[in-house]
Length: 442
Image (cartoon, rainbow, N blue to C red; front, top):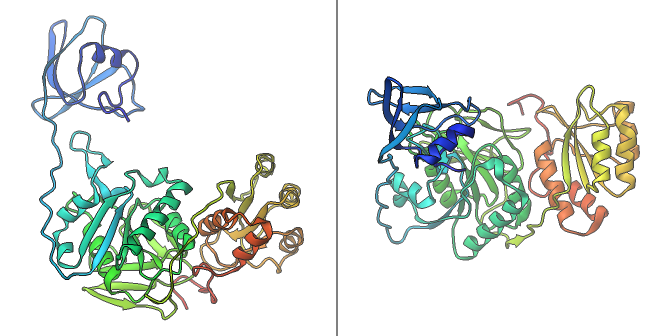
């Protein structure tokens, strides 16, 4: 993004460029009997492109409609507020070593004090300086892998995250933390759950709903809890750590293949679906909530980090155009995960393109739009017809996890039969042996 004249377009932008003005400069705009002085502010990109926004000495912002008779003069370059993190605390010897890998997102962001927005700008080392308590828990090895918002994550990023985490583990880290934007963190945690097999230590994804330099941030609680779990937890799995409630007293650790973001902005946005969290950390004490987990230090790490991108997640709805499925077949897609209704159904108009996809070698799988419960395609004739075509039911697997797993299964490059075999296996806890009947009920 070009920040020099952020949000300005067309004739107004040209006038500002001709005057050598940038956002943050102190400028004077003179027109007729009126003269205005103030700091040039950025604008919302979708706003009307005929006016300039100035912050006056009074602190108020005004919009000035640009006219041909007006002149623009830069008076001086205004000093823009900058985030300056405190110094990094000294490392204490003889503490366990934890690696923090930054990929961006709100937890690794700061407020832009000119615009009031949030930008991916804080490194993992900045996080360590902002949260000095971490230096009392572990020796922190912090580095930046990416600095992007999570909506820009691609399968290639999952592969890079897996390789970097594996490198840190082989270098002796007793746990790996990956800071990540919350919007697609569930996808990434599922991806690494399949890509990193035989983990000897935990790999913990962590995010926040408020940037780290805001007083209301949840980043410190989430990150401190994650570092403690990286050292103390008996499990060696990919998990996702976030606030368990609106309070700062506990962090929940969700299995990477069973977690979903269920709220746009609350601290407790993440929930385990059709399962319970593996653990919680409350008042500094880690409590395991289940005995069903892979133990630390037992297995040997294997990396299988290839993902096939020609996989689609398709949500069925009334009036769905089956031409969308035809388009996927025309484009040579290797896999499709259907998010069907109820127990796993789609409209009969979809049958011909589904059959075509399967006949042409694609893997087509069925999940449910319902958050709780599992697919059962033998109850109704519509489901049984889809089974006869070769649609693969995926039990209580989350649709997002199913898409990631199918990308991974096809990415192993061993053909449709092997991909189906992998899809039927419970590799990283993506299937629950017993699905919760209702939310929170065992």
